[in-house]
Image 1 (tube, rainbow, N blue to C red):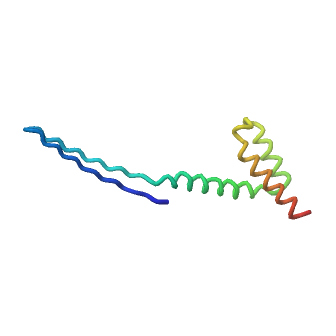
Image 2 (spheres, rainbow, N blue to C red):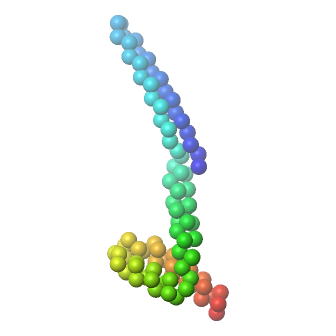
Image 3 (cartoon, helix red, strand yellow):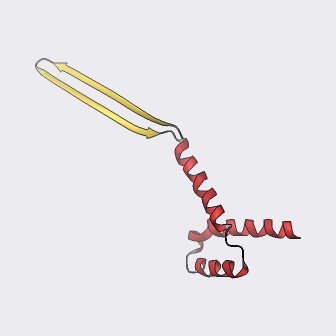
Length: 91
């Protein structure tokens, strides 16, 4: 993740008036939010992969059923993909 620090100083002299401003900006490149999202999803996939037994999956499914489909869409998609991979590797 690339980070940057930008410092700027401005001085203005007009007759007897002297203005000075100093600005410091700490930030990161646009890649930082993308990297965060990639890391977040990887961690979520890894955590959901720990639910392997039918009992675990039923409990997790019951928990997800308590929430709106829009809120659990990503989790359900990951679980579906993991189940598909499991079925392909077994059968």
